[in-house]
Length: 381
Image (cartoon, rainbow, N blue to C red; front, side, top):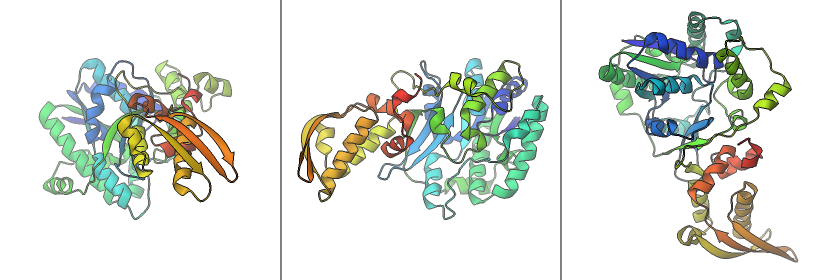
């Protein structure tokens, strides 16, 4: 037996009511719309010392690094389903399209649509919800309306993967509760896994990606595209979720003082778990700038002549200063001006993966971290 709960990503109402839904369903397994191959992160997500927000991250292994992010916050329905399952010792299954196939689509989508999980409809309708039944009815209504605009070939491919993994979970565990975007309910609820689904999922084009878990921040999440309007105001959503969990009906707006008290908390990974995307991005950039010796030896001395004619040294200098601005200890330098040339003498060190994990709260690549305009110290610890 399979029961379905339709959600909006980042909806504090869905995050609240998913627990009541699971209490009533009492499933033998919880199936969640998240990239299938990220099941390898489940142990880390249950690890001691983890603090939200964090994100599941997939990235390419060449420059320019391309990424796919799946954020989890304290009010995310997916996170609350994970937490419910952990508290009761119930197994978890992820059912969305694997990241390699999703990345292939992102790199080859001719429509240039960047969103993979978007629901940009007005979320204010949830303010009238007073019960689980009302929440479920609203999500079915909104999901049907959204599906009329979004049931393209990629959505149908994702749903073929969902039907496959839901079928496998039901065969293995028996009763399952499925937590999935409302958009997909009509495509998977009561629709059996078919031979056509088997062919689609077995032949889906894919590329090689690396998977990691990264610390995140509400400030960075608010700038992500593809997750709907709630993602643009994670602080307000967390305050709503706190009210719902406390038995209070949430407000339509929260004061500046309430938001300031919440702050922008940085996520943290469990002890011994590191985000690898920044480390790999740095390695790729160092190799591209012919500084692979730093990777091999762990330290080196370097003299750069920076001017408009020496493009290589200018790019090397730009990278090293960018790392310093992010709070990464890449070494020390002195500089002197000689006419139109700035000579920089660097005593470089290769930062460890652990050191490069912390700045990931500002962005999953060096370039994105710089665009955020933040350093790790800008977030509450």
